[in-house]
Length: 180
Image 1 (cartoon, one colour):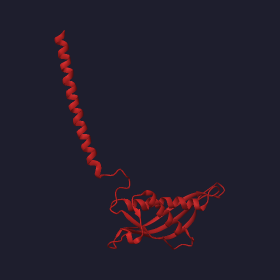
Image 2 (cartoon, one colour; image 1 turned 90 degrees about the horizontal axis):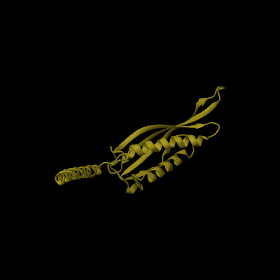
Image 3 (cartoon, helix red, strand yellow; image 1 turned 45 degrees about the vertical axis):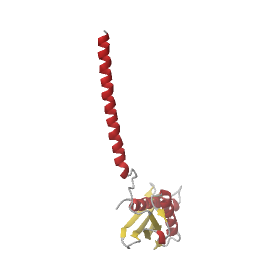
Image 4 (tube, helix red, strand yellow; image 1 turned 120 degrees about the vertical axis):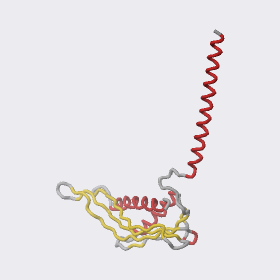
């Protein structure tokens, strides 16, 4: 009986040692995998090659007085909040965002059964360019159109502008902070 118990204990010790070796090996592999992932980012925006940006006031080619200035400030605030790039004066920057508000329209979006407008959409079109300050080349240049819908009886045109602007901010951040 003692011999059977010794054999059982021996088998159990061998199994524990084998399991421990596998656990150590798994830990080493996991450590190497995690260390190897250090150069990657989990950010959906990726990693940019620049660290500073200047955002120039948007030029306004529309009759919407003050809209381009508000949009510029929203873009600046978004970059500051995002934190991927530091917003700095032009004499300290690597990249410069310049743009123009090309058009602004408020259009009916949906109608009720008696042909009354239920919702409107605000459509804004922009020409945007991110320039490399060091050599004057363009990182990217793109024409962007964004829309924001708002309910006619419960919201204002400014609500539509804010929705379109949120889409603009997302587009500009993605274009600017992704690797090229």
